[in-house]
Length: 272
Image 1 (cartoon, helix red, strand yellow):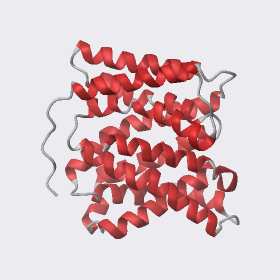
Image 2 (spheres, helix red, strand yellow):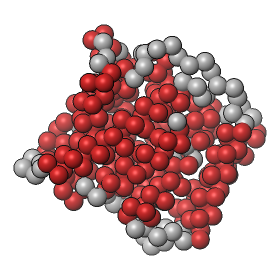
Image 3 (tube, helix red, strand yellow):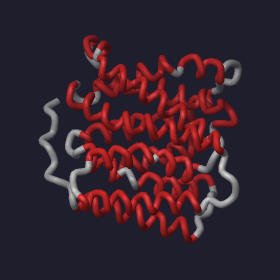
């Protein structure tokens, strides 16, 4: 589930970047959240009482802030670099949750790969874009913790459905201002694809995964994100990979494999 979510969200991010010229980061993130919210609301149909759950509401605000800040970063710096910096969030969760020295070694290995991937970018790095990516990483860390909490409190995907609805409302002002006068059927279709790949599919998979994995292990496994972002950037956006980037990919993959091997037995699934 974690691996499937990683692939889906990075391919979706690549497609989203291609829409920035038509709607801007704010317009694309609004389309992504509102379309995903409508689709999931039809499928899940959360109970009215779930709409008032404070954890789900906080989760929705976090989703909106994380997606908006990441898209602002993606508009300024390459996908692989943006995800690499953003990964500081889940890496911090992994460190905070660790209880063994070997876990710190795994995290350190992932950190070396991330640092190498950042250095291999070459040229000047937009500091505003890097700042937005770091901000997105902070919200990503909160997302990991809130996702586990919401998944334990609400049945099935009800919590995610509520969170996406809340996120749509939060991004409504920036979305309307970005899309005003420029909305088209082609843009709606592209937004629907991004919504499925970047929100509905990966968030559903990750929430289910967090019911079975400790949040610390989940955070370390997410070290695959920078590598998958670099690959998606190469395949979809034509961003070529150098030898340092390939070495970095190998390091983060090795760290993820090590984390998976050391995973404690998963917890029992939450009853739906």
